[in-house]
Image 1 (cartoon, rainbow, N blue to C red):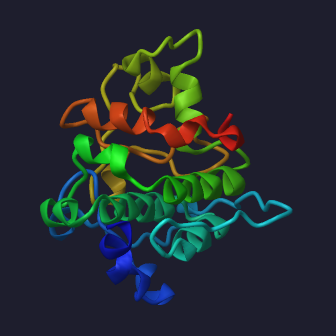
Image 2: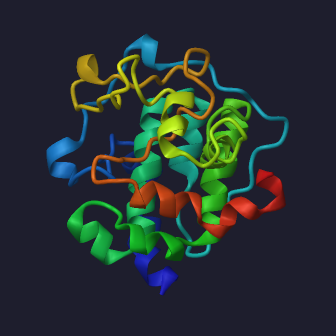
Length: 213
């Protein structure tokens, strides 16, 4: 089943995969796919690990585009590629509706989530990644409170409002510079429909792996 849901993606060329992708957790790509941003402000030198992260998949999914984006320090594109990957990994129903439903999260293939996480950790020097967010959530100060987590990782402004993600870069309030963003700021997960999606994602068993402790 995992092979069939990913088969179409494996035939994409790397060049095609690097085209700006949809904000998969937020809405269909036709409405919210942002323009490619070439501003120098969006690029920040990535950390180069001594050994390249292992690219593993339970279904032959191509993780090279994400690796390239992160190596180049393009964290904006890496964030988009990540969420686009998750929607494809979630299956045909998610692709049809344009976003991942929380009930689909437990079935996301573990090896693929591990690869995505491995890449984010490696090229951000351990600063970005879902497991970083999970650790922050479980910290004594945050104590599994999502509202406190959003403050800690910089997803809310000084007025306590969630930052805005909009197609126009001028109105996108999130931070894509490695040196400027708070720890755990990326990758993003949409919370506009509620907190069930991010809660399900944080409960995925992959984060219990030793490599993410």
